[in-house]
Image 1 (cartoon, rainbow, N blue to C red):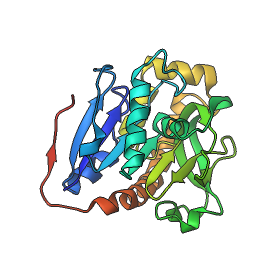
Image 2 (tube, rainbow, N blue to C red):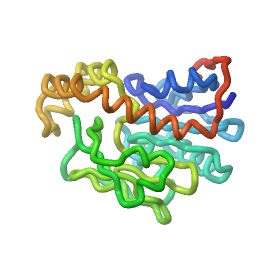
Image 3 (tube, one colour):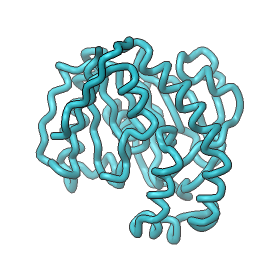
Image 4 (cartoon, rainbow, N blue to C red):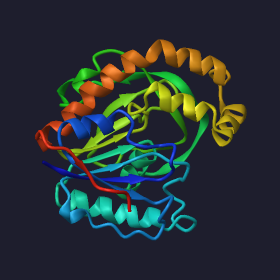
Length: 248
């Protein structure tokens, strides 16, 4: 049984499809909820994997959100100890920023469904070998990152070149939201602050149009999520017992 630390930034962005995958493997999950406890000081040294979820903050806003600096120190420690790291959206940007990659606003936001395209290096990667052709995935971000030095470029879209990368053997950054299921996406579409993003920055239709696309495409996305995240979790092993620690 592995112990997995999860950094969460807002209530609306939980583990999604990763939650049952971790539970079914019997792994212990420890949430560090920075929305609830911005002064948390987690210690990753006692854990077997680190997952950093999305959120509205930007990696270069450590002066406004000091917990981002804490998170990057934890990422550094995890990388030093070769603990598997998975960063999603903001988490991917934090991983890239920690490794020296620049972050900046995009000219055009990605909100809704976009094709995720493999690179020439995808086929040799344990996770991204599953991405053999362009595949529709859900996006919601207005920032992008530069690839860190020595990172392996694994995926791109027509709007955003750097969609995914691997650093070392087991640290991954994914800009897209493969972890979202239909229920979570619909929840986002009905939250006022998210609706404002669509109104100001959306280019793929209104919430109703995105909801219709979601119903049509979520099955394919869930299958890719299961395959790719399964490869990330594979080195952690599996046990029959299940235990989830409370958020802190």
